[in-house]
Length: 94
Image (cartoon, rainbow, N blue to C red):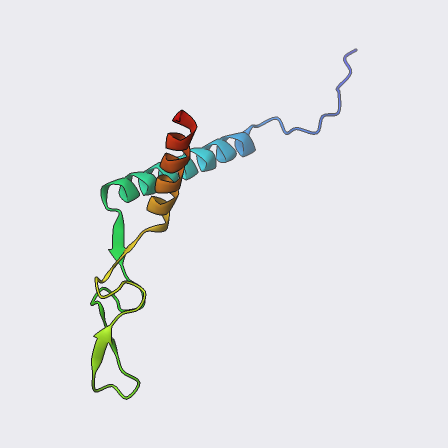
C-alpha cells in the first residue's frame, strides 16, 4: 500500500522553464542595450528630433535647441549609468 503525498508543485515543470526563458531573454536584452550604449553613446535629441533647431512661437525664426545646445544629440540614459558606475569605480581606487 503506497501513500501519495500532497505537493504544491505540479508534476510537469513548465513554469520553471518559462521563468528561466524569461530570465535569459531579459539578460540578453539588457546586455544588448548596454553594448549599444557603449558603442553608440549619443542619441537624437527628442525635443528637436536631432536637428538642433527650434522654431520661435510664431514659426518664422529658428533658434538653437535648449536641451541639446544646437548639437542635435543627447547622451543616452544607459551611457549616463555607465559613466556614473565608471566614476564610482575610479573614486574607489583612490
